[in-house]
Image 1 (cartoon, one colour):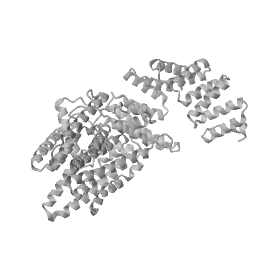
Image 2 (spheres, rainbow, N blue to C red):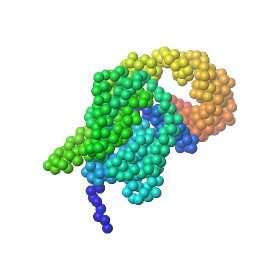
Image 3 (spheres, helix red, strand yellow):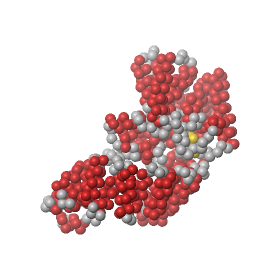
Image 4 (cartoon, rainbow, N blue to C red):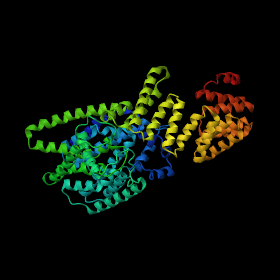
Length: 630
């Protein structure tokens, strides 16, 4: 019986230390950028159905394509049917820890050196640039895509080692398609296979190479058709010419290397420079130097060349040589898988040097301990900033005082703090709102053409209940976007507070522009009801039921109208339907209790009153005493 190699237990050490480094992830809320739009508000993630799953395979995310990643969010709901922040972060962290184990496994298969594989996996696990990929819910495509791609590469190594067994080939391509549908990073898989073969000095497997190329081309074309990345949306990125784009591309390469080597100035994505400076042109020489170094090492030190080439192969497609659009030229999460090449280059290089300098063995251990402590501290420190989004966006603003989007998101973070502050602490709440207003105005000053900045300022006005200011801002937004019916709807909601007729007129315009949009029918119906224009109100509520048949308040509204018209049987049917759709609607219980009293069913009325009270219905104590003696 073959003796167990206890050295392999060392491979578990990086997983354990990675878990410790990210232990405080449990205290991090969902980020206030990308996560609310693409996770919390994504209607296709509410329930698992064939229709929703099909929609995910036709859903673009900017210039990316990640249907399998979206599918994993189905497993992050809690028992109440809402997204669980803890579940989202837990799955992200477990994916990262699995990747750490796979990195250790892959490097061990390549080098047969337990020390090299352990240290490489350890630095991969705790590197501070991993924080964004783990803490940002929408960055799961990086960890999930890496998991499948690493599995595919490990399968390939075993496939070549064990007489090309077909089940390993099936596992390889299954993992490859998992990677391709999780993250477009996997499109460079064929090049990664060539690098593996170069490292192992083994013959290229033509079948694997050809099939993987065809698979990547097929998914790439599909993704291009869905995302339309051939027609990029620049948003408010500077319109660089070809020469400037090349400069920025090489600078991006240098920037990522700098962030990896000295991760002391991290921020959630880095804004495009308004203009290129001498620093960016210096970056050109560093970027070109990386390419030349890889070419030189290819002949002299093949393993070192492969490690550096790994970084270049994965980072070049996103290095801004091609204008993919967006507001940022770089993001830490995009360094997730490419950083493996840089880690391996350093660790394997130091290992080779120590092999020729036996007396310096202590130096390798010392360096590993120092770097581990430094990276762990920085990871912990940066993760703490993700707990407070104001501090998080201060990181971006400190790096670039002209980052208007960071000011807008910091304003949103201040608004979130104000909403969570109890009214008893009015002074603190007002200070948050003052800071939020300042940040929103700064964003508008820096980029007056971006309508989202005005929306953020609108959020502050709403919390302050400054309705005239909100009305003025919405009018401004409507002049910037002529066909923005959503802004008109918001303005109608504000104007109804002061004048029912004005609200009805505004809602009617929205209905004319967007006849299949349900909310204005509900709002206009309520206004008609308040004016006792029952036929008009009934028409709106019936349209509401038609448009959103699973919306409990649609039946509550129509039931209330039937109740006012003494159509008690129709009212009871609608109230029962509303409670069937939502058994926690306290207003429905209260309304049905009043209807039961009218129908002479006091026992049922008391049960409904009791349910309304249990669910937190306010100001019905007097009615409860009159009806039920409570």
